[in-house]
Length: 500
Image (cartoon, rainbow, N blue to C red; front, side, top):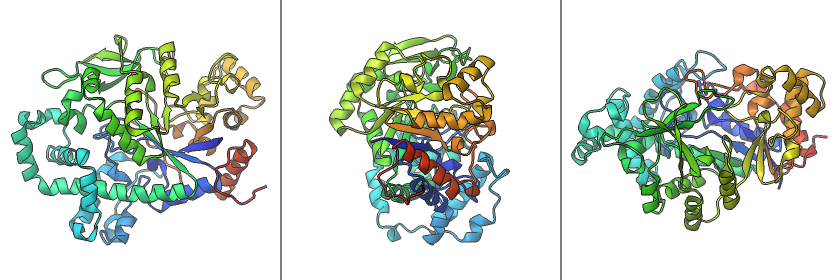
């Protein structure tokens, strides 16, 4: 069935509290998508953010971001009083997330809620802790230690605890019992609120598309507590780190800095850790987008300590064996492969063997008529056609970057004469393509300027800040998107009122 998808991270939702949350504005956005006939709501990773505020550099691949816990819902549960959170300053600008303010205030409010929390009143709390024991216990301890150490990375802690020695871990569990309980509480509340929001969206005919980064952050509970999973030296420092080699867009490549996996170890375990990771993701989302899919066929390695990605080496990854094993254990799942970047015949073969839909990004296409990202060159319906992703300019901003030759080709291809008509024409081109799902950032429907860009790769600061306002998500805009979906046979199954 043909569908449409809008990318709008929780952080970008309207909110009175500086960052989007899983409360009434999230439910209103689900209502907006329903009215617009949109079948998929795509999010960035829901994980806690660390230094740099990127959801792709998280303290845990399984935990949820406490920033998204809605205070008003906690008030409804009797855990907060309105003045305890409503009287605080949450933003420095109404259109940008100020993560420093959120960090300073959010945990204090959540700790007040925890002080009133009685597990006996919440009958599913103990079951939640038991069901998620495989990751929750270590995550809560890790975060308690991080706060005790003033936010320092685990490799800057005292030697015994940084090396995760048994006696030091046991002592920390005893000393930090209350803080550990607090971080378990935040995860309980996060997933309690998330399940209700997802249930509401699903009932409205909307599937949730989630995002699973390929790599873990160096400063994460996974690297600290399970070093065998990674390619580390005896001091538990990365031998090589992740990134991308130089290309036309980045002359020095992209240095991500994430530790790489010890794939030989993963293979010996029957890919147990990856199987559980995908299991958790598939329970959190309806459709799982796997980031940097090509890295499973082969991955770029950069010697640790290098200042850029100009020097590196490709190494063979687990390839199809990983995904065959996961499917054998979990059955067939709904997965999207982010197959962008340096794509070789071997990567295409991996995608064909898996059968997952790949991605086309129209912003990459307007070079010449042979470009594979232009709709007339799509060779399969089994793909998602994006106007752009969170790593791209908004369409409005992108048009301003086109050189004279590209601008001329773009106008000719889209059949428009004016520069200002290009963004909507790109959306129509994606929606009119043969791709099973057409997708765009919410910014592209809001005609956001370049300042609305979510992320500029390989830059630190100024990213992940975009926020929408409530008065932008109008019934008129919903009707416009609905008509687009109807025109191109992309309406979701949920019945809608006639807007003709």
